[in-house]
Amino acid sequence: MRHKVLAILLAIFFLVGIVGCGGYYMVKDPASGNVYYTTKIKEEKGGAIKFTDKKSETSVTLQNSEVKQIPKKEFKSALEAKEAPESKEAPESKPVKE
Image (tube, rainbow, N blue to C red; front, top):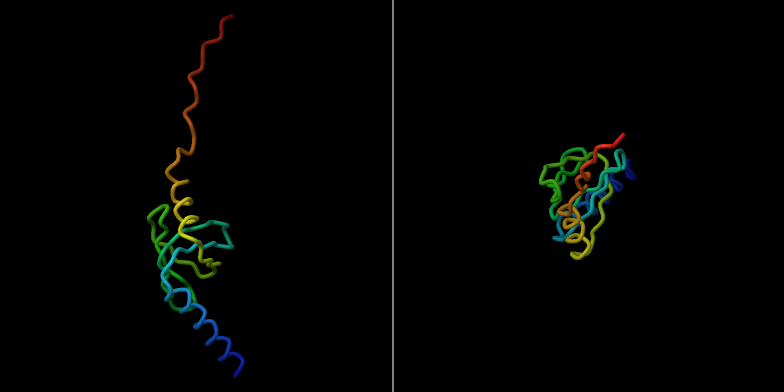
């Protein structure tokens, strides 16, 4: 019982450290492999986290996640990669002469 309480207190301390500090974060969902970028993380009930993904501007809630604080430069370059065109239009096909 004591170990369980200690583990919970350490987890809360860790999450408060992450949530309390302003900064730039890369959040990875280990289940899907999706990567998100945010500046604020909110702890939900049951250990889940909630945040707004800055790439897609959508609200995300994850029960299981890997959170990593990253430098501003890395954060900005990840967001700029979103703005780059994802695919170029296919060139027009020419009719084949027979």
